[in-house]
Image (cartoon, rainbow, N blue to C red; front, side, top):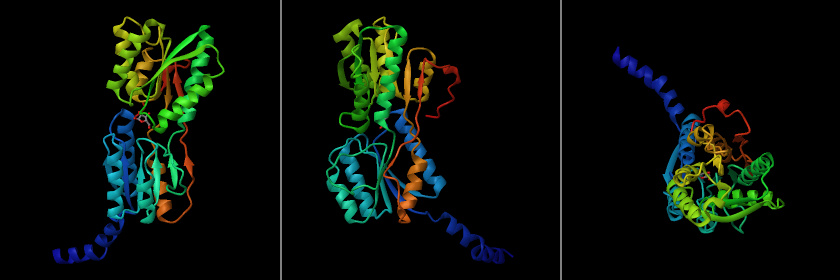
Length: 316
Ligand code: AHR
């Protein structure tokens, strides 16, 4: 009986389950690091979506170093993965390794961040937020807030993300372009906080020491740095959200909770949920289908202009 059962399983059930478990493709993904709740949420989403799509994922964490990402891409090439995806920590310096991927015939997807190159055709597409628009939305909020409060002169300090990364460049450009024609706005200084909470605190201490209570606005390129900066402001007896307008980007749960308490005024959403689009695009490339050159998710603004108690749980 047992032998008969085993035979039946091998002829029917087993054959089917092997077919079901066979991964549809092998995807090599090099992640920037674990610098923020956003990044951790993004990694989790990519892992979940790979599982859901039946895609085998080789995930490598570069711990914030470009050379680790380049080495990871070379390993993916040596491993002959079907598709390579990566979130470039900075925009420059990818030409050689991407030429190697092209020579090996492996398509490359950019996730979250872009590269800067004079060469064409090194990558197939970019799946990520419209960082320029995020900067515009942050500045538009500030202009509305200044109108509401009747402010005549506004001193802004900016804590920026990793120097030469796409979100740093684009969030700055979108913000600066939007306030450019508003004579009330002055950017006192922009300082690199590297998207890290500890650096956000350090930058804020420096800015407070230098500019004291002449700071009207903190524009911070991510929640992590904002959350690092807030206690430093409070240590000086200044109330963030009241004495200083605080604008952040990402929209993670912790920042939204602080927004609900009135210590942050505005959070521009940057969704980390890029996994579904990544898997769908990787499958299309494997099947030789055309893909969109740029895919931007829809994003919104959370601020003290709305009933913040209605903001749904964020999940990252
Ligand atoms: O590239 C997206 C940015 O990187 C997010 O805003 C930030 O939190 C992350 O580290």
